[in-house]
Every structure is written in C-alpha cells, then in structure tokens.
Length: 407
Image 1 (cartoon, rainbow, N blue to C red):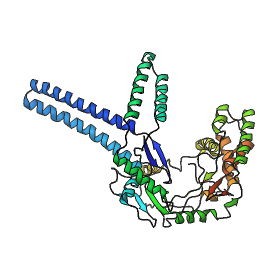
Image 2 (tube, rainbow, N blue to C red):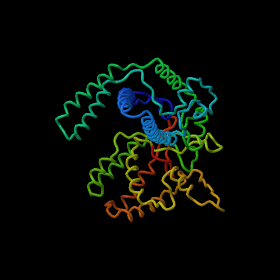
Image 3 (tube, rainbow, N blue to C red):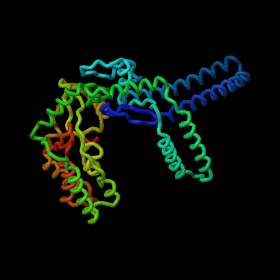
Image 4 (tube, one colour):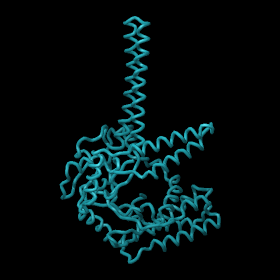
C-alpha cells in the first residue's frame, strides 16, 4: 500500500505498491539463481571447447544479450519520457516544480513534490480488510479462468499465504514516515494551492488568493455564469431520471444503458483552475469541469460515445504524439506553421445550434439508434445546460456554453 497527494494537494489517496516490492524481491532471487546456472553451464561448455572457441562464443552471446537489453531499456525510457518528459526520474525539484506562490518551500517538501502528484509512498498503516478483499477479488477472477479447476484450492492457499505474509510483515521505514509527515505539513498550509499545469506534466504551487482571483474572473462573467441560492442537484437529477425511465419503457434505450447512466447519489460539481504555464498570464484558470459524481456525468459519457464515431478524422489528430509524428512526415519547404487559439472556446459555444447539429449528425451515422430526435435533444440539453458547481460555499450555474471537459 502507498499514499499519494490528491490532484489539489489537500488529501491522501492510497494505492498498493507492496505487491510490486514483493515481486521485485522475487525477481531478484530468480536473477541470482539464473546467474548460478549460467556460471555452471559456462564451466561445462568451456571444458569442452578450446579457449579461443569459448572466447568467441562468449563474445557473440554477450553481444546478443546487450542488443536485447538495450532494446528493453530504450522501450521503457521512451514510455517514461512520454509520461513525465524525463528519461530518468528528476533529481532536482526545479525540473518539475514551479513555485509561483509567496511561500518558500523546504527542501523536504520540494523533494516530495518533484516526483509529481501521483507519486506513491508507503502509508503509516494499512487496512488489512482492504488487502484481503483485493486478494479475494484476484482469487475470484483467477478461478473463473482456470482450465484445471483441480488447482483452485492450491491457488487459493498460495494467495492466502501471500496476503497474510504481506499484512504481517508490513512496516513503514523511517524515511517513509518522514515523507508522510512532510505531506501533512503541506496539507495544513491553506494559503497555497498545489496543482498541475494546464498543459504538460509537473507541479505548480500558487497562492490561494491568486488562484481564487483567476476563478472569480471567470465566474463573474455574467454572460456565461450566474449565482443561485440553493443546490439544484436533487431537482435536476429527478428530471433526468424521469426521462430515462420514460426512454427505457419505450425501449429507446437498452436496460444495460439505463443501468449504466442512471444517476445515484449525485453531488454538485467543483470548479478549479489549471494554471496556463504555456501562456503569459500564468494565473489564468480553466472553466468549470463536470466532475465524477454529478447528476449528468454518466449521461455525458454515454452521449460522448455516440458522438465520437461521427467526428471526421480527416482534419483532426488523435493526440499530441500523433500530431508530432504527422508533422515530421510533412514537406515543410516554402511553408510555415501557424497556431490559432480561441479564447474561452468552451464557454462561448452556442448550445442550441450545436445540439441541433449534433442530433442530426448522430441520427445520420447511427442507424440502429432507437432514441427519437426529440428525446436525444433532451438528453443533450440535460447533459450540457444543467451545469452547476460549488465554489467558496456558494452555488453557481453556467448560462451558456459547455464545461471544459469530463474529469
């Protein structure tokens, strides 16, 4: 088990790395065993060959091993670069941490943050019930895929042994305890916000006043947002559930889709900003994000899957990596590249016209879709126009435009 700082830097999220350490120890033992076997085979082969023959054979084998090893290392370094922008883990906090706040962080705090907001460390204690539950799930999944059911009891016994050994031997190191203490110190500082940049990887520290100012500049735009007195979540969830029950009754959606998109225990969205480090105004925030748990989150996911096949690919690219690959293959002779940016694109989208266009496009591309144009329009409206969020204890809703994206 391990803990990491949450996306806003104020909580701890627990993940499991004990099994990874156990696997590393196991592989290390296997490696030592293989080395012994290799030495024994080398001794036998060398006794049957001339010294020059053995030398040539050894060099040839080592050459092949080095080629394979280099290939594996390059593959993992490429993955690491794509994820973090570094071929190796950063050794200096300035590589990944940008402190725009008025607070001077300690060396220990910077060393914790430099590995990113998803970095995991061993927690102070573990929940044994959670560990055993995870192993029960593993055993259940393995049991369903066994070709020889006679080995089910043996596998269960081995998994049980691993689980109990892990729980009984768990003990965080002094270094881990110090890291936990440092994270708690960061959490207590309510004057700063720890987040990630809008583009790329890394960690950004902002003064909370600066962060809030950027968000208030967005919220105070009365053409796109307005303040509301009460939380409309229950009412809007009710409107959506009534429509969904109607669609299921008329067989316009399947029982499986109904079960997946039906909202339960919804909560208002939270607004937060991601600093635009690639622009001059570093304090700018992002429009509100529809967070997981909102009444229209599942329906938005469902509708996005309907829209995706309708999006033309001729003049678009999958992601940044695909774009870079395509650009490298272009002949740029006597050509120049221009980048256009639309300010506040999402909040300025004309919803009614866009929804009408989306409905017509979906209907044309999805011949098997049973949902009528009218009800599809209602679903899109509920997924987009019912965007309300909580900020500083007050409720706001978006009048026009759409949210920045699903989180």
